[in-house]
Structures are given as structure tokens and as C-alpha cells.
Image 1 (spheres, rainbow, N blue to C red):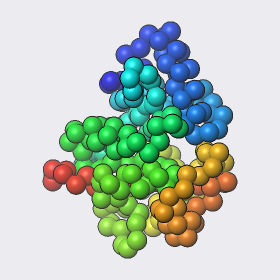
Image 2: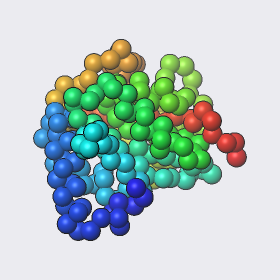
Image 3: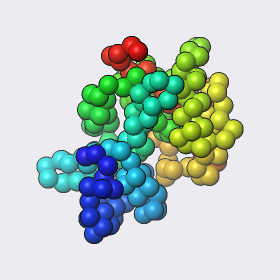
Length: 206
């Protein structure tokens, strides 16, 4: 749905946030605050509610950005109940969201599973090898203008102490974690994050 803050009434917003907070706590395995969930689902441009068999099991939310003449879909948040992890829902939902005319897909995370899943959708950075200058430019402006990230590293896309703590009860295991640990050197306990920026493979050239 477009602009969820306008779509729901006050009571509906409150009820939705409560339901999604329970889902977020289950998905992350931590005591996520209701306010944090609300910040990721109400003021966004687009919200997807993930339903399986009539049961609400997750959500994904997006901001639509335009910087440097490029259209960017920014994944503000995605959470799926733990019992549905590994079912490919990340790819399904984000593939639907990317059906618009976007040049780049971006998000920030400390989850190597999210990195691996996003890399199947777009030509994702950072990765081993040189990062193109236009991707660095897009990452830098997203960090500064959209996220207000100071001390953002243009070379690695890492922001130290973004969250102040680890968002997960345990960082999800995946072979991509080696890249996070040894190349990006994320300190999860301090809340480091990496901004992921991917060139949409079927993007129109402007």
C-alpha cells in the first residue's frame, strides 16, 4: 500500500503497529521497541504486509528516493516471523517492490543473510573488488541526505556504531558472514552497519 500513515485511521495504525511489533520481536529475537517499529512502517512511502494462509507473518517497507538523477528504492525495514525464515520471502517481496522503474536498490543492515538475498536481486555493493564511482556517489548521498549518517566510509560503506548494539539475539549464520567479519570488519555488539547499494539489473538507462 502507498503512504500507510494516510491509509490507516488512528486506531488502525495503533493496532497494526502492535501486531508488527510482535512479529519484529519474533523475527529479530530481541525486545524491539514499539516506537522503532512504528518509525519503520508508518512514515514510509510504501508498505507490504506479508500474509500466509490468512495469517500476518511479516512486513517490508520502502522509501522512494531520487538522488543524482537516479530513482532509488530504499528498503526501510523487513521482518518475517522466524518460522518462515529460509522460505524465499525476502526475494519474492522485494522482487514485487522492484517492479517499478528504479535504478538502484538500497538498505542498511548487519545481517549477512540479507546481504546474500539482496545480491540475488541486484548487482550489489560492497563486494570484493573495486566499487564503481557512481555507486559510491549514490551510497554517499543516501547516507548523508536520507539517513543522516556521519562518519560514513565511502570505501567500505560501513558506518560504525549505527545502532549502538546488535539488533539480533544472534547474528544469522551464512557464508557471507566471512565477508562481513573479515573484510568489512563489522563489530556487531557496537551496532555497526553496512549500507548496501545495488544496481537494478533491468534498470532503464537515463
